[in-house]
Image 1 (tube, helix red, strand yellow):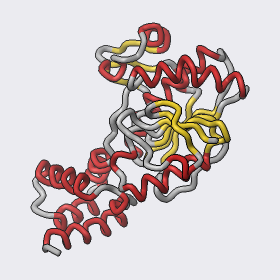
Image 2 (cartoon, rainbow, N blue to C red; image 1 turned 90 degrees about the vertical axis):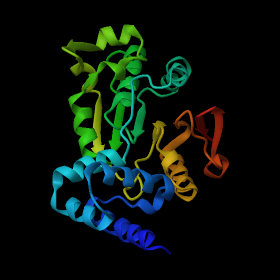
Image 3 (spheres, one colour; image 1 turned 180 degrees about the vertical axis):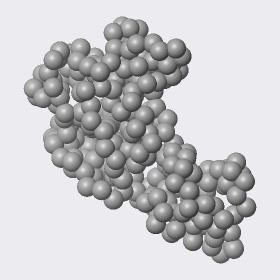
Length: 260
């Protein structure tokens, strides 16, 4: 093993102690490349120097955590998928269950779970559903609770929802309190923290692609166990579960699975 590889192993151990993120679950080549790019950006000479910076500088810890957890999201992200959610999945679920339990895992700054909140408010006006967004990054969760977004994050959102549920403030768009109040957010480490149960719909989109196959299989089982029979699990449009049947999931569309 090269000196650089040994240094990276030490860095991974110390990073877990510092920010709580276990990089052993992530695809190493992909993650190490991202970290090296960040070290070049901040001018750190090596892993040892940078871990000392992280241990002493909470602001840098926040920036690095946000960078490493890849907070990318959008309202009505992947139009084909959200049309399926709007036109088929949610109508069928609310027909079968009066109050839905929905979880957006790795929710970033909240656009996807807020999109679901809007769609449910249209389907069942005034009905309170349980809507949860979780993420490892507390900075992203703070932005989710603030719910003020740049216009590019709303580019896919149908105009009727944008006009009804947002107010423009300069170059930013503020989500209405009526929708904000339908969703709660909390910090969660998917690899270590317990999962809730009894969900009708779980979205975990564009998260699996960063994990090793073993971790993907582990999380697939955990998510399936969190669903009711007949519940829906949705991953990113570029993601495919490796062995969904082993977790009692069947593929019903190209990135949509149902628990049987």
